[in-house]
Image (cartoon, rainbow over the protein chains, first blue to last red):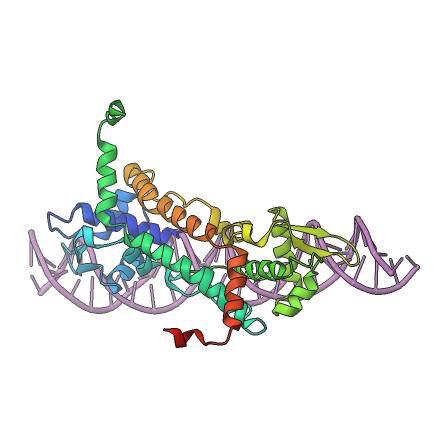
Amino acid sequence: MRISAKGRYGLAAMSYLASNYKNGMAITVLHISETMGISKIYLEQVFSLLKRAGLVISIKGSQGGYFLNREPNSITAYDVLTAIEIAMVEKTDSTVEEKQPLLDKAMQEIVFSQLDDAVKSCLEEITLEDILNNVEKQKEPDNLMYFI
Amino acid sequence: MRISAKGRYGLAAMSYLASNYKNGMAITVLHISETMGISKIYLEQVFSLLKRAGLVISIKGSQGGYFLNREPNSITAYDVLTAIEIAMVEKTDSTVEEKQPLLDKAMQEIVFSQLDDAVKSCLEEITLEDILNNVEKQKEPDNLMYFI
DNA sequence: CAAATACCTATTGCTTTAGTAGGTATAATA
DNA sequence: TATTATACCTACTAAAGCAATAGGTATTTG
């Protein structure tokens, strides 16, 4: 499944903000771009979309930066990806509407809208906190194997 | 959710083949293109992919054409779309693997592979027969409302 | 042999994606 | 108040993918 670089950068950046959520400090785009190895100018555009969607709050000027507008466990992958990727949100075009309207409608109902629902409910179940938890889990010594 | 024209044409064409499955006759690309209002030359390319995936059988020469290789209730939307759309199948690229390998892995496991699974199991549940059934259902007079 | 078909390769124009460039506006701080 | 660090904005470029077209060859039927 194809997720654009922009969307992935957004997820990574939001996860990073989430990991710094508790200390309440603003994080700069430059800092994230260096920490993540992402082009700074490109990441700025990503933050522009995240801000427009109300997912982050920004502070201008020196010592400014960004932080999350909500708690990490209330921001979902769906929130982030739909803020950034048009393709995630947009309705599938009609296919054979002119000559085969019934078939067109059937495809829409049976395939495309069910797919939309499946994607949406999958991504809505995943929060930034879930991602961070998995990162922490990877840091643990791999000793859980002994218990199997 | 964005599904390419190619993928949608493939679904429509396969549904049409399915609706003619019982009479066992080969259907030409030209016929489908005219019935559906799809460019013939473009549809040929779609059938090239469907054939490569083993979903249809072709007969060359005069009186030739295509028909389904399996029963309509055993061909899924997943079969058709993955035969045609690269994006449906391909693994999501890594994002911040260099500098943040744990986060990269977490995103892959928690978000992208779960999304792949959700898409796959949704589309695998939908067969060509399901699409045809919905078309038939639309043809019925809208009298079911009286029973509600 | 002629017609109808599948099948193949290349080309074109368009849109999207990824990334760059060069600014302005704003706030903190020295 | 001047400097600096930041967000924020608009335009640009290059590459890739998508949609569609063009012009064939190979094969089968009649």
